[in-house]
Amino acid sequence: MYLQARPVGQDGSMTTPLYRRVADILRSEISAGLYAPGTDLPSERELRERFDASRNTIRQGLQTLVAEGLVISSQGRPYQIRKHEVFTLNASRFEDLQWTTAEDGDSYDNEVLKAGRAPHQTFRVQMAPAPVEVAARLWIEPGATTVLRYCHRFVDETPWSTQATYYPKWLVDKCPRLAEPNDIAEGTTRYLADRDIVQVGKVDEWESRPPSPEESRELQIGSGVSVLVWTRTGYTTERPVRCTVSTFRGDLNRVKYEIGDLSALQQKDVH
Image 1 (cartoon, helix red, strand yellow):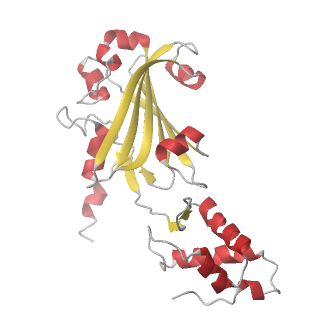
Image 2: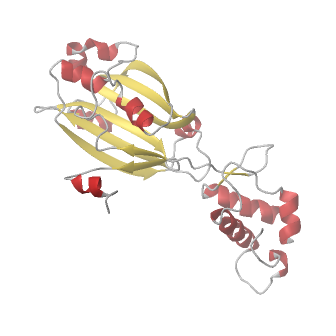
């Protein structure tokens, strides 16, 4: 059932632009669950009749919802309610060797599998000059040679994130598997630890920004959706050994940290 509203084209007493009123009403209906995620909105013709509004007005209203990330627009297809199957990443235990064992393998796979989801990733390995921001974090000169291990990650076959990890050349000389064009089954953090390069500290930085054209393509990001960028620099007791830049779809990811003594959570079911 539609929310009760007079046709916007007949409401001349209001100063809000007609397309905004169309967007407001549809947004309210989406929030109320009238349209399920993944389903189509009524056609432009149906919306024109319902709201007694012009085609341009309806399209402007729909594009407003697209920009807000509520609706997907694809050429030749109806406007569709965006699915929000959010994946929660526990960043505080991600790559934690006390949580993962050598048999567990990659920490990303672990986290996704423990959430009852299906992980999948593709990756490439290449020699790459260090970007200025990465070089500063690794204490090397901008443009210095690094090994870049790049992962394109999926959850349930949906693009979820990319991960670009830069390793300085001196470290690769000690740990040559980092430069091999193959996945490291036990995970790179475990591989380094097994070679006595133990990361004892991490610095995390987060930012939100519009996606680049390449990020929009790789992550299949629609208009109005931002990306979350997580930069993690890993340290031994002496120096930084890697810089990882992970880029997430802002609409499909949630991040949480667990800090301090959380033994009280074990009592949750008791109360």
